[in-house]
Length: 100
Image (cartoon, rainbow, N blue to C red; front, side, top):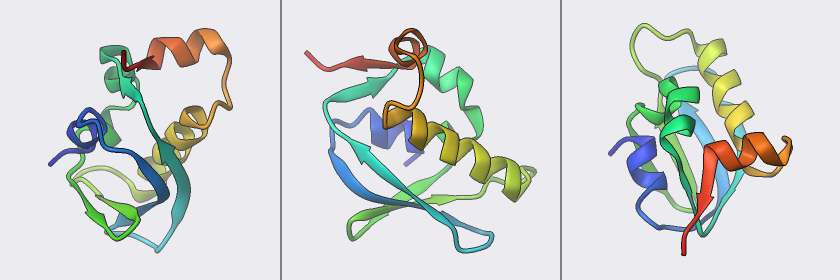
């Protein structure tokens, strides 16, 4: 399952996002009642297309081939910060939409 498939599945999460395939780093992640738009998918292509799995209360995202770890983790961290609301409302609304 890709990360975007997981996010679009309707599941809720409150835990850690962890990257497999590099240094052990994680970032906090809360996900509930929203979905990623096509714009959000295009804005974060490396993480959206990455394979992932749910382990306990967290999500492990696998580092894709041909993607530098630091770039991947930076994109993942930026995405989790935006999901937490640390971005202007206009950009947030372009990346996410609420489930109705």
